[in-house]
Image (cartoon, rainbow, N blue to C red; front, side, top):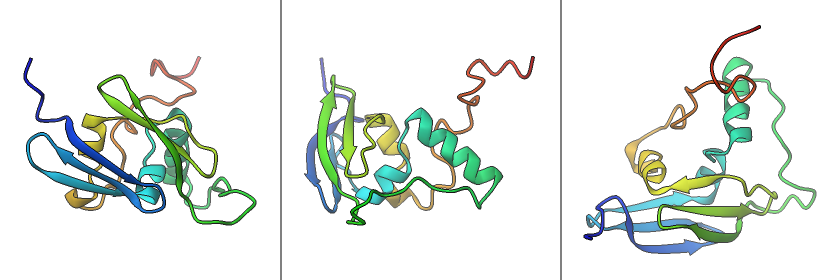
Length: 131
Protein backbone atom coordinates (compact mmCIF):
# COMPACT_ATOMS: atom_id res chain seq x y z
CA UNK A 1 0.00 0.00 0.00
CA UNK A 2 1.50 3.41 -0.93
CA UNK A 3 2.34 5.83 1.86
CA UNK A 4 -0.24 8.57 2.39
CA UNK A 5 0.93 12.11 1.64
CA UNK A 6 -0.43 13.14 5.06
CA UNK A 7 2.03 10.97 6.94
CA UNK A 8 5.50 11.97 8.07
CA UNK A 9 8.53 10.78 6.17
CA UNK A 10 10.81 12.00 8.99
CA UNK A 11 10.32 13.29 12.56
CA UNK A 12 12.95 15.31 14.43
CA UNK A 13 12.14 16.28 18.03
CA UNK A 14 14.42 18.69 19.82
CA UNK A 15 12.88 18.42 23.28
CA UNK A 16 13.67 21.99 24.33
CA UNK A 17 12.82 23.62 20.99
CA UNK A 18 10.19 21.82 18.93
CA UNK A 19 9.17 19.14 16.46
CA UNK A 20 10.12 19.24 12.78
CA UNK A 21 8.15 17.02 10.43
CA UNK A 22 9.10 16.32 6.84
CA UNK A 23 5.90 15.10 5.23
CA UNK A 24 5.62 12.37 2.59
CA UNK A 25 4.44 15.01 0.10
CA UNK A 26 7.76 16.86 0.53
CA UNK A 27 6.44 19.66 2.75
CA UNK A 28 8.02 20.51 6.09
CA UNK A 29 6.45 21.82 9.30
CA UNK A 30 7.99 23.10 12.53
CA UNK A 31 6.01 23.10 15.81
CA UNK A 32 7.50 24.93 18.82
CA UNK A 33 7.05 23.03 22.10
CA UNK A 34 4.83 25.80 23.52
CA UNK A 35 2.58 25.62 20.43
CA UNK A 36 2.16 21.86 20.81
CA UNK A 37 1.35 22.20 24.52
CA UNK A 38 -1.10 25.08 24.05
CA UNK A 39 -2.99 23.27 21.28
CA UNK A 40 -3.00 19.84 22.91
CA UNK A 41 -6.01 17.90 21.59
CA UNK A 42 -6.76 16.45 25.05
CA UNK A 43 -10.21 16.91 26.58
CA UNK A 44 -8.87 18.95 29.52
CA UNK A 45 -7.10 21.40 27.21
CA UNK A 46 -10.19 21.75 24.98
CA UNK A 47 -12.18 22.66 28.10
CA UNK A 48 -9.52 25.15 29.21
CA UNK A 49 -9.55 26.83 25.78
CA UNK A 50 -13.36 27.06 26.00
CA UNK A 51 -13.10 28.59 29.47
CA UNK A 52 -10.60 31.14 28.18
CA UNK A 53 -12.94 32.02 25.30
CA UNK A 54 -15.77 32.60 27.77
CA UNK A 55 -13.65 34.41 30.36
CA UNK A 56 -10.17 35.68 29.43
CA UNK A 57 -9.39 35.98 33.16
CA UNK A 58 -9.58 32.21 33.65
CA UNK A 59 -6.77 30.98 35.90
CA UNK A 60 -4.30 28.91 33.91
CA UNK A 61 -2.70 25.77 35.30
CA UNK A 62 0.80 26.26 36.68
CA UNK A 63 3.92 25.34 34.75
CA UNK A 64 5.38 23.45 37.69
CA UNK A 65 7.17 24.43 40.85
CA UNK A 66 10.57 24.63 39.24
CA UNK A 67 9.66 27.55 36.98
CA UNK A 68 11.90 26.02 34.32
CA UNK A 69 11.07 26.39 30.64
CA UNK A 70 8.54 24.02 29.12
CA UNK A 71 10.14 21.06 27.33
CA UNK A 72 9.00 17.75 25.91
CA UNK A 73 10.38 15.09 28.23
CA UNK A 74 9.21 12.18 26.08
CA UNK A 75 7.40 11.32 22.86
CA UNK A 76 5.96 8.07 21.59
CA UNK A 77 4.31 7.00 18.37
CA UNK A 78 0.69 5.92 18.70
CA UNK A 79 0.14 3.24 16.08
CA UNK A 80 0.93 4.60 12.64
CA UNK A 81 -1.41 7.57 12.90
CA UNK A 82 -0.26 9.82 15.77
CA UNK A 83 2.30 10.90 18.35
CA UNK A 84 1.90 11.59 22.08
CA UNK A 85 4.15 13.94 24.03
CA UNK A 86 4.91 14.15 27.72
CA UNK A 87 5.67 17.73 28.74
CA UNK A 88 7.73 18.93 31.69
CA UNK A 89 4.56 20.29 33.33
CA UNK A 90 3.23 16.72 33.53
CA UNK A 91 0.71 16.94 30.69
CA UNK A 92 0.68 13.78 28.57
CA UNK A 93 -2.90 13.01 27.56
CA UNK A 94 -3.00 14.61 24.10
CA UNK A 95 -2.77 12.33 21.07
CA UNK A 96 -1.69 14.37 18.05
CA UNK A 97 -2.82 12.66 14.84
CA UNK A 98 -0.94 13.48 11.65
CA UNK A 99 -4.08 15.20 10.32
CA UNK A 100 -4.36 17.30 13.50
CA UNK A 101 -0.71 18.35 13.21
CA UNK A 102 -1.27 19.41 9.60
CA UNK A 103 -4.23 21.53 10.74
CA UNK A 104 -2.30 23.29 13.54
CA UNK A 105 0.84 23.92 11.48
CA UNK A 106 2.12 27.35 12.63
CA UNK A 107 3.00 28.21 9.01
CA UNK A 108 -0.75 28.32 8.26
CA UNK A 109 -1.00 31.53 10.31
CA UNK A 110 -2.58 32.33 13.65
CA UNK A 111 -4.83 29.54 14.85
CA UNK A 112 -7.71 31.02 16.81
CA UNK A 113 -9.30 27.71 17.75
CA UNK A 114 -7.83 24.26 17.75
CA UNK A 115 -9.58 21.72 15.53
CA UNK A 116 -12.17 19.94 17.66
CA UNK A 117 -12.75 22.87 20.04
CA UNK A 118 -16.07 23.64 18.36
CA UNK A 119 -17.53 20.24 19.38
CA UNK A 120 -19.73 19.56 22.40
CA UNK A 121 -18.43 20.30 25.88
CA UNK A 122 -16.68 17.59 27.87
CA UNK A 123 -19.49 18.05 30.46
CA UNK A 124 -22.04 17.37 27.70
CA UNK A 125 -20.27 15.04 25.25
CA UNK A 126 -23.37 14.15 23.25
CA UNK A 127 -24.40 17.79 22.85
CA UNK A 128 -27.89 17.11 24.20
CA UNK A 129 -28.20 20.30 26.22
CA UNK A 130 -29.38 20.63 29.80
CA UNK A 131 -31.70 18.27 31.56
